[in-house]
Length: 88
Image (cartoon, rainbow, N blue to C red; front, side, top):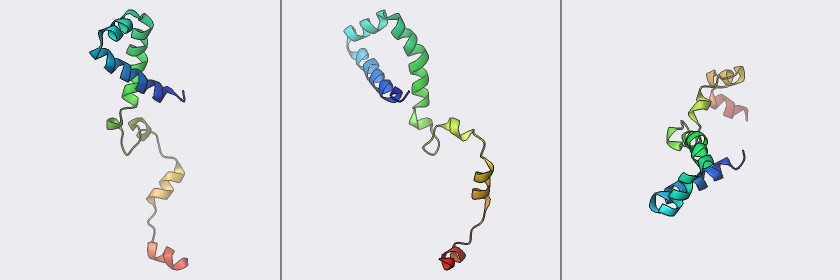
């Protein structure tokens, strides 16, 4: 799991090269395990790792998560910055 990002980049490069080189394309198309992995795993990983779909630098799926009560308290408070600075 820790290397899946690297594997995804390598495999995407291989797919890119296959478009320009018939030998690579032929080898990939003849391998049924490759075809299955590309259809099931690679496409899903490319969707997850597509940074253009991220919101605020995070995958959009993380935005669906409910905030816990500590987060609510932190973000809903109105702080008087001047009063905090005077206390220092």
